[in-house]
Length: 118
Image: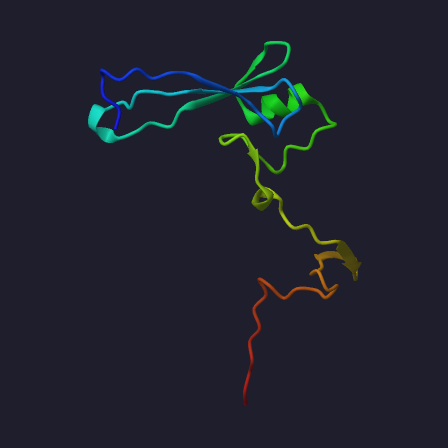
């Protein structure tokens, strides 16, 4: 827990998940209420040219289209493969687009079947 007397320091490290020269800056914040616990720090990235980037979308614009940030976790500054969504090929049947499963069969997920007995 942070107290008023503790000195909080800005931590700057080179971000290995980004191109060479990008720095990750972590700026601790004091919690709004002293007894409420630790507040999440502000995270910034600094480009090799010195420009400070404040959001993941700004980072994507600064890096350009050649870098895919889909698996990049902005808070930790690391690549996280869990952020990648598994993508299945789309097949077209009867004019309706349906997503296929990895084995090529259509999925019945989200469909309800009612069995009638007479």
